[in-house]
Image (cartoon, rainbow, N blue to C red):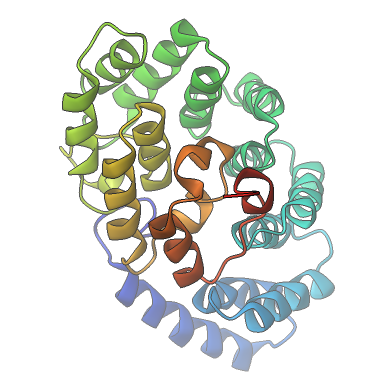
Length: 279
């Protein structure tokens, strides 16, 4: 819930998950949902979250959400090939799920398959045209592919649908990236955004934290990007472990501050060996 609304915080959410999850298992230990839900409480303990998700899948092999969450966790730990395999299984089990398509797109971006990420979200919108889950990734994929017109269209739609009331944020970002706006001014605004700002009404932002970090790098404001990544990575429930896996972060990947964040998150950076070779 805290990933979608500011009406409940991560600490309260975690407390409720553990309480309700354990109670559910006392009622029926053969239901997979409690195992999958409680796995989210142990994201820094690889053995525990993986065991819980694998248990959920063993109990119900067709449980698409468990495969989805396994895929994103594997990706966030730097295990990209395994993460992709799990996401492909989730998509095959539930091809109409917009949130699975959204997560699949991120894992594809992390693997450097930008065109495939764009295609995955286009497929999702063709099935559920009113769902906005993939608009962020359609916009970012278009940006990475240099298609500013498509990026503007998708991010505008995201802005109109989001609770953050982003207004003209997409236009200012696209204008800055295309040389028609003030990059530093836009970057300073993005870097000052609070944690989880996309779910805060009136925040002026509709993008998730890890995507804000990527846009800061694309704007060329590396110091601000590093400041933002460091600050957000210290928040309970942050998704910066998703962000550090994106190849678009390569311009700051070899900075000691970035590497310190990766270490703090308990992840292994699969891109560092190549990007930072000889550095």
